[in-house]
Each structure stands twice: as C-alpha cells, then as structure tokens.
Image (cartoon, rainbow, N blue to C red; front, side, top):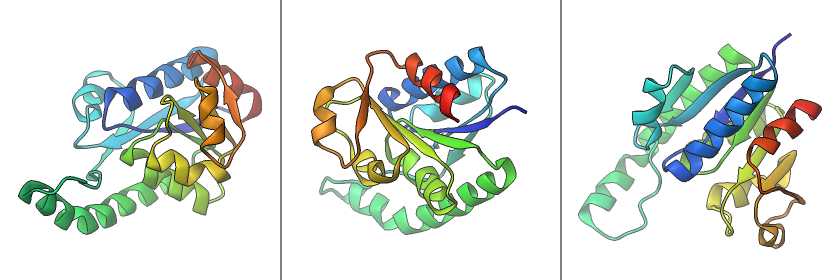
Length: 178
C-alpha cells in the first residue's frame, strides 16, 4: 500500500525547493502519495498551483518582527489566521491520515508539525540552514530525525542530526524507515 507523506514548508524558496526535491525523490522511488502544505503568502502560493501537485495553502503568515504600522496590522490578524490554519490542518490530517510529515522549515511547517506531534505521527525535519530557524529549534527534539547539510546544526538543537549534503538522500533514507 502506498505511503502518504505531508511535505510542509514554505515562505521562501529556501524552504519550498528542498521540499519539492524530497517529494520528487520519494515519488521516483515508490508510489508514495505526496501532499505539500505551505502558506498563501509564500512563494509556494505562486509555484505549487502551476506544478500539478497535491497541495494545501494555509492562510498563515509569519510573525512580523519589525516595528511598522504594516507589521502591527499583520500581527493583529495573526490569531485569526492561526485558528483558521489550525482548523484546515486538522481537516487535512483527518482526510489524508499521513504516514509521516517531512518539514523543511518556515512558519508554514509549524502547524503540520504540531498536528503530527499531537497525533503521534512520525515527523522528520530537513534543515538547510547553518543556523536552524525557530520552527526547527522548537520541534527538533521530538522529531524522528533531523537532516542537515551543516554539522554545526547538531550543537544548536536538542536532537542528533544526520549530516548529508544531498537533499534527495533524505528521501532515500525515509523510504527505508517509514
């Protein structure tokens, strides 16, 4: 029976394109079902609809850290966006019943990782930065595995990492254990 993976991440190409590479590798090596989750406000909102891939775009936006009227306005909308995105994520997990979640970082991956954690669904994180982002640092401890291209990441999170310089090797590894 085909396994179902949720690929979560986005906001920037640095999160989206590793997710696409891992998903493509999983599809190439098996009959896996891949469903991408991102944000309506990230690069994935432009790219995923043109790629003929299963996807869900959440109405979530990252916390704005600058002090401006625009940032204050966006942050004021965050609680409503968070609730709406959480409901959409819960429905997606109920409908798909995923075997695992693979996150590549960014605010768009936080809710799928949270749902996986609460539902005892195994999740994996692929961290492509030398300094892990907030989402990776928060969820790494309970991840099955954290994959990275930088050995320095091992010192910055509470989880042993697997060092790999090739993103598709993540897909190879996952097919062997999930």
